[in-house]
Length: 392
Ligand code: SF4
Image (cartoon, rainbow, N blue to C red):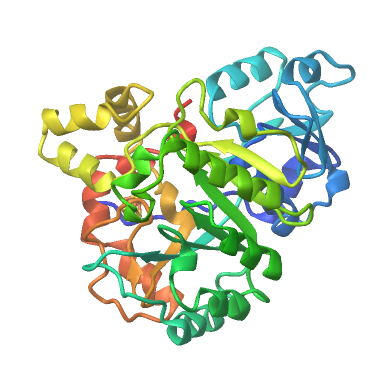
């Protein structure tokens, strides 16, 4: 089967050649948009003056940029192809956005790009309370040594520290932040509103990303710690955390698996340091999806479909048609477990620890992963092209 090829986006030279003297307009005020801003500034060397505005419905400001409604943007003069470059970063409505841009004469690659055309790499350190696949606490010396040794190869990447239920529940996470903070921008991703985690993010000026679920019942199964909460208490805790967020502390709230109206909508008021984004409803464990596809298990596929807000069969068949293309997950790599062993992929939670778990050199890891058996099965089904951000 295929060798795992990297999918890393445009080089700075190529990007600047296409951009010329134009400024950039970002379409879509969500989490991907914040990563676009980080890539434009961190990798491509643009300043905030190079970004014209953000086009998004329902926001007034985003990361300090002014926001226009897309309708106002497209009807404004002298907005036309050639006046600037659009980066489409919206999670949904992508086909609609592309149609509107093309109707207005914008050409793909020349006048507009997608967020995934830009280079952004995320290193993930995940601390999972899983008795089989994770160590009980962070191995700070090994993680720190890995990051220090490979800092050159990983330059430009963001370090995401994530965990279940939240990274704070693991001893030593603050040491990891302190050790890595000088080299990498850091994001802490949490499933629980945790005031201590917010204080930690504030102390070290790192970004906090809080996943917000439509109901506490969705969390109970995985996180017994919330077993005693009802929805009112859960949303009250989120509200309390938001009120405590200081102006200088960036935080991203991700509405997970949102129905049309999310219970947390009422608390999503506009503040420039709070970034709102929404995850589509999709199967979170790709291992089940892969197993269903490999074995043609229609019952398991139907169960996965029930978790989605789109036609899963159609999406999988579109992905399979792109089987020969590079893996989208190359951008989130390497994925390190608490004990500094590494996992093949951030999308597959179970059973994919690399056998060669003590690799400490990034190039060795890449080499090991190129022909990894699990990746081959995934590519056989085209699952490596199944990117929920690109489904809309
Ligand atoms: S398991 Fe699939 S999606 Fe993950 S890295 Fe391997 S090929 Fe890519």
